Length: 139
Image 1 (cartoon, rainbow, N blue to C red):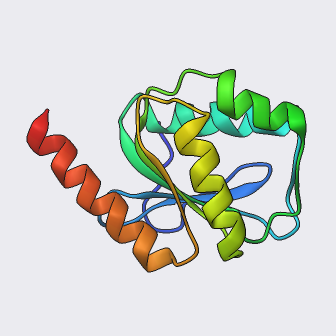
Image 2: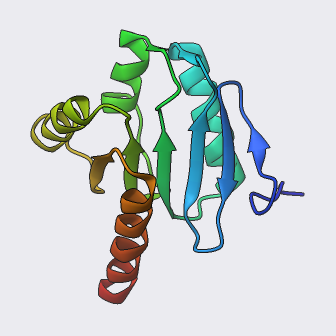
Image 3: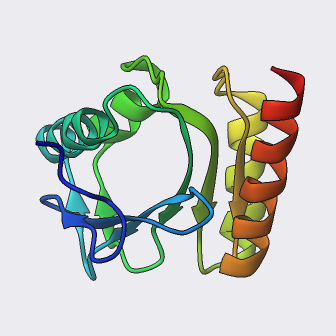
């Protein structure tokens, strides 16, 4: 039986995963999470298995994380085919890094879904819900 992502959610090796009432999948990295290639692959596979190929908007909170390896960055930017993401919002605490990350993601990484970086969770959530409504109207 598939574990439920509603309510209490589940834990992966580096994060807490929970679906909210509006269908947004929240992935909150644990405080001082250190992500290397092995943990990135394992967590990604666990989330993919839980969704069972359902599509969802995803909000990733990296504000508490301390380290992500170059190999993990390459894995997320080039090494995977992501079928289950409608749109991706990333929460970052530093406004300057937010701008740099948005530029990097818009200009250098090309996914089949939009990615935006935010410093305010409510803005990220609003964008995801709004984009998802438009996505389903157009599909």
